[in-house]
Image (cartoon, rainbow, N blue to C red; front, side):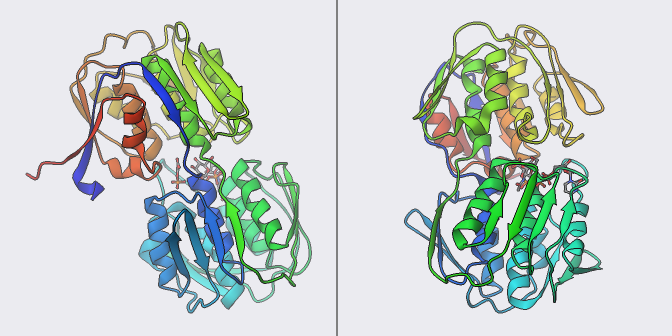
Amino acid sequence: MQENQYIAVQKSPAVHGNIAIQGSKNSALALVAAACLNDNVVHLKNVPDLRDFRLIEKMLAKVGIHTSREAEEFLVDARLATDYVLDFDITADFRASYYFIAPLLKKFKKVTLSYPGGDDFGSRPIDQHFKGMKKLGARIEPEGSHYTVYADNLVGTEFHFEVVTSGATINLMLIATLASGKTTFTNCATDPEVVDVANFLNLMGHHIVGAGTDTITITPNQNLHIHELKYTVIPDRLIAGSLLMLPGIVGGDVTITNAIPEHLASLLFALEDMGLEITRTSTGITSRKVGSINGMRLVTGMYPLFATDLQQPLTALMLYADTPSSVQDNVYYNRFSHVEELAKMGIHLGRQNNVAFIHGHHYRDLVADADVNCRDVRAGTCLLFAALGAEGETRLHDVKHLFRGYENLVGDLSSLGINIELRQEVEV
Ligand SMILES: CC(=O)N[C@H]1[C@@H](OP(=O)(O)OP(=O)(O)OC[C@H]2O[C@@H](n3ccc(=O)[nH]c3=O)[C@H](O)[C@@H]2O)O[C@H](CO)[C@@H](O)[C@@H]1O
Ligand SMILES: C=C(OP(=O)(O)O)C(=O)O
């Protein structure tokens, strides 16, 4: 359906309102896979209703793993898994497909799947996943666009990540629960999503220590009590962080009622540095425009440094600052698809390798009447936010990318007072 739709936005009045944030997409993707490791039903709360999860449901149904949505819960029951080959088209269509290696290795000691998809911002290697699996004793056979992992005898080991990667840290943590004996990983990612998955594995009865630090040990428990589990996914820090930027662009205030401030520390400092008033309370985070917005020099890095996923949305705020800014993405050097699209709105950023330069101020009187394409979820957020400060109408196409991250984007923004509409594309 989203193939035939576009979003139209006009210059927005000051925003006011409260939003409760959906569950984290990136955490829930891993938790659904982790739930498939349990030998009984798992009830996950806060799994967002997004395309990746609909793909997962279809992919798992094909191998006999039952999932369903009942009331607020996403149910997973992997007890009757029937096949070790995951659909090639589906596994190539989203990033987190590699998290399903562990549950199928558990059942069949082998699994075949495609190389992962996800947002395209240049090279997204999975060499650390492969190196870690091999160190645990797996054998990997590439076969064109797909590969098979064989794991007859996984043995606990020590593995040092050459690159800090959240995906590989989570994936290898899941696979290490299948090994005999203890595994120690060093140079791990410390993201909240890693901690969320470790907490769930501990709830299952495994013994994971150190998640959230650079050293994680996994002592698997092969005599788990087999019972139903309930677990709640953490709120989505990337959506919370993005929405907190809005007052800086159009004025007003936004309160996120269920965010976890520690997960957003580097963003909140950046927003304060840019001149927003940020209030952290036990019930949420409020961002309010109280004066002019300053530019800043932003550098991304792995958690707890500034998240690469938030640099594109923050670029939109930088457009409306009084002084220039720069954004250096050290995680994905080519995560700049918004730059070409902003140019269609008359917003010209400089770009040198992995750094974008934003003049600021200059765009305050911008008049836009433009059609732009959302090429990935966070680039789409940048375009949408940039358009909210410009006179005239901006039409965002390829919204399927945008909706990959947001469960209720149009509803949430409308509730804040933003003039946003979902329209049908006209067939030509
Ligand atoms: C589904 C999901 O959770 N997606 C998030 C996850 O992606 P994803 O898990 O794919 O990203 P990683 O944390 O793995 O990537 C971090 C860095 O490590 C590099 N790398 C990664 C794996 C590997 O085997 N070799 C390697 O060199 C990557 O190129 C990148 O430069 O974290 C990214 C970085 O915070 C976010 O932008 C994505 O939103
Ligand atoms: C890049 C993202 O997702 P994925 O890793 O699933 O492509 C994202 O959520 O910004």
